[in-house]
Amino acid sequence: MTKTITDLNGKYIYFASDFHLGVPSHKASLERELKIIRWLDSIKTDAHSIYLMGDIFDFWFEYKHAVPKGFVRILGKIAEISDSGIPIIFFTGNHDMWMFDYFEKELNVTIYRNPLQLLVNDQKLFIGHGDGLGPGDHFYKFLKKFFNSKLCQWLFARIHPNLGIGIANAWSKRSRISSGGHGDESFLGKDKEHLWQFCISKEKEEHHDWYVFGHRHLKLNLEVSENSRYINLGQWVTQYTYGKYDGKSFELLTFEN
Image 1: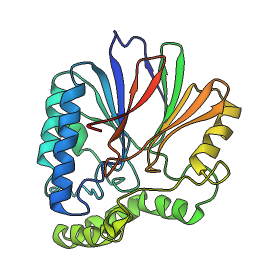
Image 2 (image 1 turned 60 degrees about the vertical axis):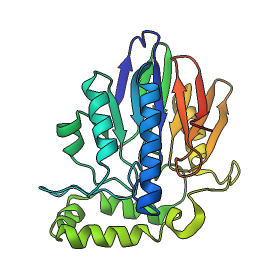
Image 3 (image 1 turned 90 degrees about the horizontal axis):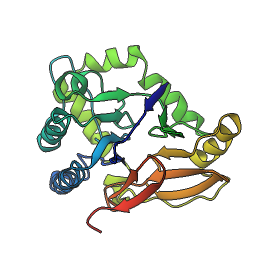
């Protein structure tokens, strides 16, 4: 899928990923949520659009008549910014892939489930959450295909929300954030960084100036080819990093460093 933006009118496209709201505790999640809101307030004056690149929530599932409890502050802020005319775009991640139409109907947010080619002026970006891309990781790719299936979603929807969300929250407590790792990851090197390998392979098929992903919990700005770079946005559990793009150059910045 391709999306075209003809003119930023002197404004910026902002990118952020991996907020993982909901873990490791209510207190820590709320503090992070308030920080994200301060960031959104700080960029809304010069934002052309805002791209939230997946794993915004550590777990999300939309039942027909219920959504997970909490997160009212960030939902309200997203609604406020969207209502002001600034487009907000969500990419589903591996933690919030069960996002259906609630955000589209209630918050006027556009949802993407797969990577997107973004054309801005004469530059070309390839953007997405990043999970399941590149070589290897076959077991996760199988799980992702199953979790994204209508059958799996229908079966989970049959579970009462108290039990279903309870199971999901218990599972989240085993994640890399809740288990004490704070979401930090180690750089694995060129041969083992699957997303970097994906970018190199994709570049051989079609040139893109920028490849922008989340998922890895690392702040990265790496060369793909002479005129192409791979950006990873990092995470908001300990790093608070985000991307700022003006149609020509891409900056990786830290909020309230």
